Each structure stands twice: as structure tokens, then as C-alpha cells.
Length: 113
Image (tube, rainbow, N blue to C red):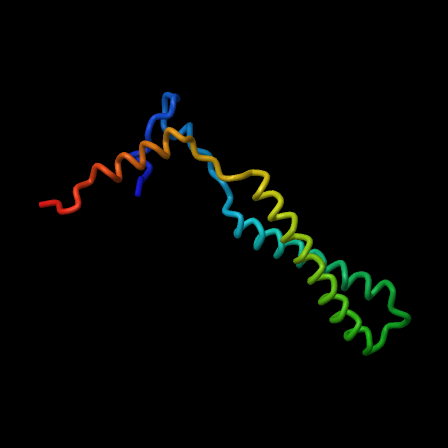
């Protein structure tokens, strides 16, 4: 395992300049799904209130059904957008850094004393 102090130099003055923070794809899918799900649920409730024929006890049922439908559509859409963003960003690691880490792992003796 390589920590921040052991980052190899990859052509830049500072080894930390060569590193880029990337979003884990599962975090992107979960986060965007959650955000779009909330937005979809709120939009569903708003649409149910706007389109309901009258203000009655049945409006609670309409809002609940619309929140579930809008929320599930939002989760699917947000998950798709989050996955697309994560794939387009990609995980990058320079071949030189990968090779340096492999060489460091091989140089450790099997039975240190």
C-alpha cells in the first residue's frame, strides 16, 4: 500500500500534482440517485396537488402514490446519470506510477528479521 508520502514523482515538481481525485462510481450512482429521487418525489407531490380534482382526504393517497412514482423515476434517472458521469471521468493512474508501486512491493523481503 502506498500512502501520500510515498507518491512517486511522475514528471511534475510535486508528486501530489500528478494525482487527481476521482469519484468512486458507486458513490456517484448512489448520490445522484438520492438527489434525483428526492427531486422526483417533490415534483410528484406537486403534480398530485396541482392535478387533484378537489382538496379532500383522497389527496393524501394521490400525493403518496405520486411521490413513490416520481421518486422511483428520479432514482433510476439519477443512477443512470451518476453512472455515466463516473464512466466518463474514469479512473486514471499513470503507467509509471503503477510500475513503481509494483517494484516497491516486490522489493519487500518475504521473511523480514
